[in-house]
Image (cartoon, rainbow, N blue to C red):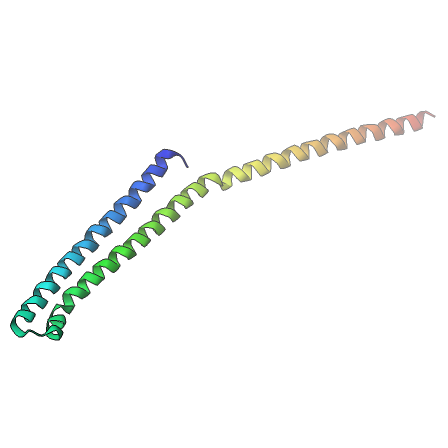
Amino acid sequence: MDAKRALAWAGKYFALTSLFAVVGFALVAAGGYYGFTEGYAVYESTDSYASSLTAGAPGLLVAVLGLLLYRFGKAWALFKTLTAATEEEVGETFDTEHVKSDIVAVLDDRLTDMQHDIQSVNREMRDLKRDDDEF
C-alpha cells in the first residue's frame, strides 16, 4: 500500500476514534457531574452514604456507558478501517481479470508450441513416407 492511501486510512481511523472519544468522554463528564451533584446534594441533606450513592447511581451509570461507548467505538473503528483497507489492497493485488488474462496467455503459448510440434512431426512423417515410397 502506498503512503498516500495508508495516510488516508489512518486519517479515517483517527476521525472515527476521535468522534467516539468526544462523545464517550462527554457522557463520562456529564454523568460524573450529574452523579456527583445529585449524590452530594442528598448527602448534605441526609448524611447517608447509601442514599447519596443511590441518588448518584444514574449519573454514574451514564458515565460507565460513556466509557463503554468509547471502548466499543475504538474497537469498531479499528475493525472497519483495517478490513476495508485490506480488502482494497487485496482487491488490487489479486485482480481476477488480470489473473485470467495471464492464464489464457500461458495456455495460448503452450497450444502454439504444441501446434508447432505437431506440424514438425507431420512433416517428418511425410518425409519418412516419401523416402519409403522412393525405395
